[in-house]
Amino acid sequence: MSNTTGTAKVVSVTDTGKVWKDFKKITVVLDNGVEGVANAKNFPPPYNAGDEVEYEANENQYGILLKVKRADSGDFGGGSPTVVPHKPEIASSYQQKQVAADSRSNDIQVGQSVNLAVETLAASVWKESFDNDKYVAQVKYMAKEFYAILADLKTELK
Figure 1 (cartoon, rainbow, N blue to C red):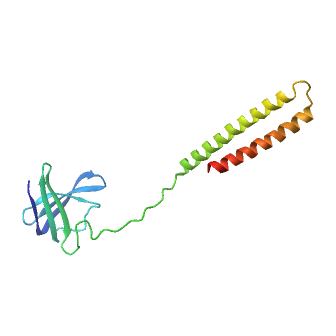
Figure 2 (figure 1 turned 60 degrees about the vertical axis):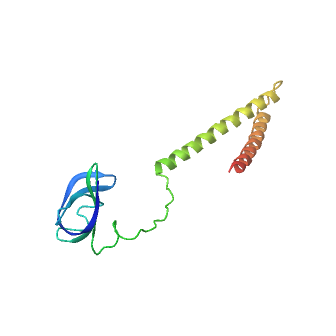
């Protein structure tokens, strides 16, 4: 296994049709006899046949891997690194709808539980005689109280 560096002219650049991660694998032949595979974001790469390039050739179990750049372009990989600011994740519309549906589902379950509690309490209060108007008024009052407690709980949990 050997590593060499140098300057040479490109004889040919060929797309192998293979991809590794986001890179196209290309075969590069140099005028000093060095031939190997390089990775490029796009094909054709930023160098062409006849261009003067700087290269690093690293031989390993896969063959000769090349890092190639135009002689006048700076560092391998296109120059100095740039800092890309972190973009906050934006939930897809499906995710937003799913969260909203889950929230509505939770609210419905809580509402049903409150209604059941109110009805159970109201039924136990008026076992002996039933007065519809009084019952409706009492259920409304208890529901209002339960929903006020629920609103306070939601505020505390946030």
